[in-house]
Image (cartoon, rainbow, N blue to C red; front, side, top):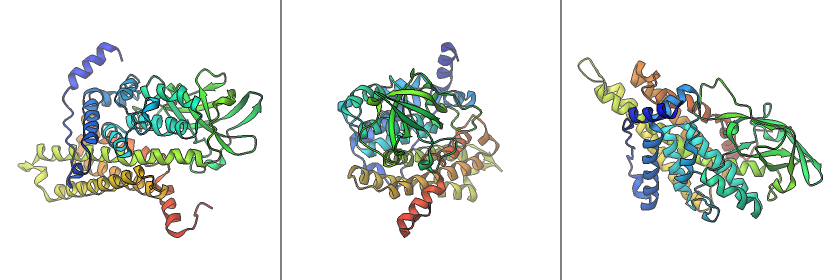
Amino acid sequence: MSISNLDELYESNRGKDKFISPDFYGVDDLLSDEQKLIRDSVRDWVKKNVSPIIEQYAQMSEFPRFLVKGLGEIGAFGPQLPSEYGCGGMDYTTYGLIMQELERCDSGIRSTASVQGSLVMYPIYKFGSEEQKQKYLPKLASGEWLGSFGLTEPDHGSNPAGMTTSFTDDGDHVILNGAKMWISNSPYCDVAVVWAKNPEGKVQGLIVERGMQGFTTPTTHNKWSLRASATGELVFDYVRVPKSNILPGVIGLKGPLTCLNSARYGISWGAIGAAMDCYDTARRYSLERHQFGKPIGSFQLQQKKLSEMLTEITKAQVLTWRLGQLMDAGKATPAQISLAKRNNVEMALNIARESRQILGGMGITGEYPIMRHMMNLESVITYEGTHDIHLLILGMEITGINAFE
């Protein structure tokens, strides 16, 4: 799309985003003034910079790459990481609120931020050397560099322990071979945090940079979901990676799983944003659309749908607020995070489907965001641990029995 057309797109869609956030239980009263200020500033940025163009980019199945710098400027990349590395130094509730506002517009835009902050920057901060932190984090935080996270493989998704990507010793370097699949940001990434097996068969993380010979990032085409997000593969064909690029602070699956907990937490907030957008769209439509001489919102079945949506959104808001407190206190468990991710994404997907019903045929068009949200959420309910996997994580917490074995 040319710049002139992009300017026209912004001008023609300016002011069309009329979203009003539901807050039936006054959760705003539990937030600090700073948290609300940051949330509202992100909401304003989204309405101005993302909402006017997101439908067209989704229709074209194109990633609006020019937004990456803006996401860095508003602090969407690693906001919970320390300011000494160019990050926001914010609490986890604020991080969640930022993810909520991004996904309120589009899951793919939130995915870009989640991967960058929780799956690329977080492991470098948590497990990286000081030299690695100083080199990579400021550029990733600002949006100068884009990152991706390589764990899932073509034959190993829910079972990461079965990964076949591996590296061998080569003096001051290692030789990396293998492939990762369903990787957000990969077609445009400057760096990738990749998890592979070392010569002893233990999982370790490596930072792979674009330009290293043998490292390619094919794009995944023909997606019906996350169409405004860049998805692809990470392919390693005898890639020489300096040993200084190995994350020194962790060995084993604890590394990538710790990162996934941070990402899943952000998703639990983000899904609420998608649900709120669908609910608010359906609410306004129910008051504008007339049948049988009155607004369809006056009919009992439509009121039932809207009442159930608001109920579920309110429950999720309270759930994530409490989870944010636990995260800030360092007390949140993986099972608690799984509960929130699983509950909130299912809630959002159900609300998207019910909202589409309220809009009738108009609900399937790009005039409204609901079908795009619904398709996006079909991916969100699968990635960072499928809906069923999170059920089994909870089941193991409840019974003490590991159903994966």
